[in-house]
Length: 204
Image 1: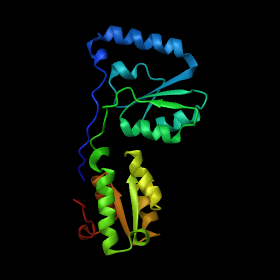
Image 2: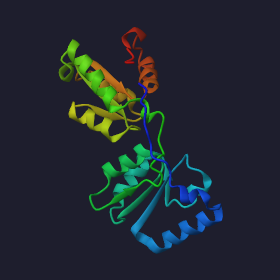
Image 3: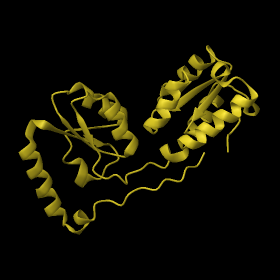
Image 4: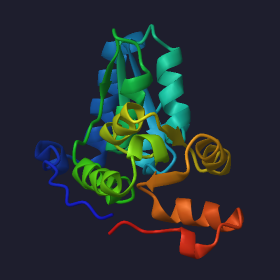
């Protein structure tokens, strides 16, 4: 699935600042906020960003860290959109998760829009009773609205490391699986499990 996503432009005033000015502003803001803020930096961030992070790691680890430190009311997540959403899902109600650049997207996470998933589900439901026959499984690196879709239809989220176990879990409960948005993770996992290619249908 390929989604077209319109994202807002990044904050332009900061683009005119030098690296030294950006560094000093960030250090000053951290000093003022103190223990009220926690900065999370994804592994893929640039050095000039990651140097300010209190914690570094992959998206799920950082989201869990945010939830565990409920005494920090402000969580600044230096990553992409779905990462901040995941942190917001796991965080406490008194915490606010902030994504510095709202234009920070992920092409893989954007491979499936909720409108496309809804259309696919409706098409499946015309052939089989979808909620009884098809188990939706969504890669954790995806938009919150896709995770919500899975929850509404009794589905599950997975990581790259537990995809095989999740597929087995799905098949123990329903006959078919709708795996999204990462087609390649689904296909590669199915290939390793010995599932014939003719049984893997791509919704386009």
